[in-house]
Length: 152
Length: 152
Length: 152
Image (tube, rainbow over all chains, first blue to last red):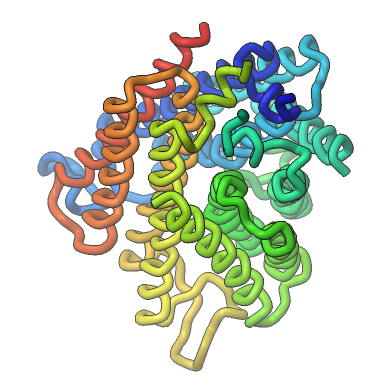
């Protein structure tokens, strides 16, 4: 007698369990970029606020290339990962094939980890970043369109 | 015997079904701004990273007005749409009038589409952008306050 | 006969009810930073778009220190609060101790309010901002790791 939603959002549903798992991995991945930014700030002693200066060599500097690179990776995460969190959650309600859904969640997560790696850990030539971005982007669109078509 | 939450988050609840629909539209709307930014970057051959330069005419440039405009639209989306996703989801738990709730979701979605349009597709004079922002902002506050009052 | 998820996401579950409450507070807190940015823009008559100029004294200026400070507070919120919304929601599924979970939600919310206050309302010397950031960051990691371990 339960509703479809309560079934779909049960951790006994392997699709939803995979969603919970990969979404949590993405929380940690998103938070990890903070470490990449902080590492650059503290090694170059470059900060955004006067109150952050840790010693006399520290300076307030904006636009430093080594700090801006992980910051751009961070912003790109904010543009893509919250969209996945919500659309993945709603996509679970469409009763998708478990094989497809779990692999979409997995591919999105791997693509975003790869995106951070090639953008801000070991910068690699294109199209490495473009491809990792495009995989995540296409998966998000697929899930959102599937959800729209299912409930339209 | 089901809990209130499992009822409210059932796709047989028209409020929740509308939430799922409009949230998915907003996922696609948010992702669409990427196209607006990329269009400017490729037409002006202006990029943020040396590895992105597609030919000899391409340059690393920051602060270009035509690129920054859709980027500001994108950031404004990030400041408002994820807040809608969560507060809309939680607002469904307050057993709102279906008429009111569905129209709030619809108005928020239309307002954010209008915001992108007047900001970054065909820039229009104020107060077009201010109004489209304010509608979305007020709806989000209304839903968050309603949820707080319901569960306080 | 209900699923674990439908139980955990019931408003009769005190952990979930606290999640709903504090997440809604954080929606309002996030939206409040808009007021802090707008206050600086209108008092200094500094805007980002030509169509925003309200009178002849208004100018398009980027990088003004007084405007950028609340904007950085806003971006820091975007880097941390949506991650809390999703990981808090999923953490409710792990059947945590109500005492622990409710205090984690409460501490995260207070830490983010403190972060905004010491960053953009009354700028205070470090480590006030670093500490308020770190509390929220550590709680988010704890909830994400707990969720991963529970469902791995």
